Image (tube, rainbow, N blue to C red; front, side, top):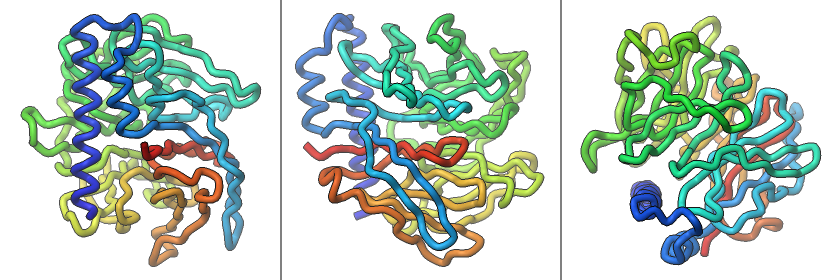
Length: 333
């Protein structure tokens, strides 16, 4: 079942990307074509939910989930801003491409930040300045590269010009990034690559090429908390090479040595870390936690079935102060 689930999700992602690219080529950006809207409705809507969280000595407390995207269609890939006040995410609304939006927690307002003919995905704040927005951008020729925007969504600039086929990424501090890189040909496995990043040299001139670490990985790349990595900078990722058991692993950024952390929650590939080294993952409409140093199994910490009733959790992001969690719910059609 896990292998089938993974295959279905890959086909879904490729299908959505194909639809967006086709719509762009046809220059249908004034309004979303009915064919795309109907196809997305058939796959099920993606909505963002936020909960207040508190970790006690023996248990967790989670509030009732609140829908913060409130949009019929595609809303995905949330990320908190460093000040804990906002959530960045991408949304497909009037047009056939995705743009970056910002949800302001204090007044529950939403602001559109980018409005481009290209599609932007996976927004985050650049650690070097704490303000700039970095995204994966699908360019006019379907090339996928990293781009930077000002905090208000203006002045787009290409980053690491020669690094292509980027699907997702994760910041490993201000000076390194972990990249989920697509295969050169259809059917080739995705791979994890580590690349240096210099904010003073954003185009990557004369920087070393990204090192290939491992293939058959999940899309979620995070920095390992210092309580687990010590003084070493390490990236965590999901190794999906074994269909029976997906394994959460880490790679030392300095020497590139890979080691195991713990098995992933069955059927899940998205996760978040707490500062004390606890992992959080979702399955169905439930949340689970596991501290690899202390726990031998995943423990259920929340069940949102009575409130949400439909869909399953994916894409988790924890606020820097660890008081809130935002996750995406793929609603079943």
